[in-house]
Amino acid sequence: MSYEDELLEATGLFEFVEEPTDPDQNGVRHPDVEVELIGMDGNAFGVLGRVSKALTRAGYGDEVTEFTAEATAGDYDDLLATVMRWVDVR
Image: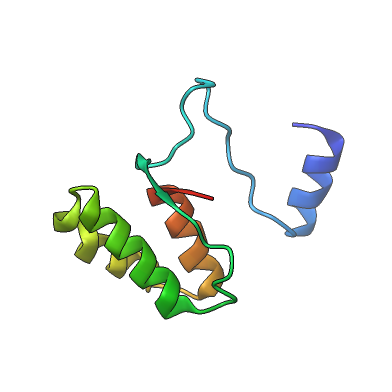
C-alpha cells in the first residue's frame, strides 16, 4: 500500500479494497450483462429497472429479487456499487 493510500485510509476518507489478483477477473457477477447508465441522472428507480430488465433478458431473471434486495439495502451510492458488482456498467 502506498503512502497516499495509507494516509487516506488513516483519515477514513475511503475504504481500502484489494484489487483482484487475476487481471482477467474484474469481480463482476454477470460480466456478460451490459447496462448503460448514462442519462439516468440520479434516478434510483430507473437504475433498478434498467438492471433488472437486463438481468431478466440475459436469463438471470431468477436473481432479480436478490439483486433488488441488495441494491435497495443502502443509499444511492450503495445502489451504484451493487450495480457495478452485478453487471458490466457502460
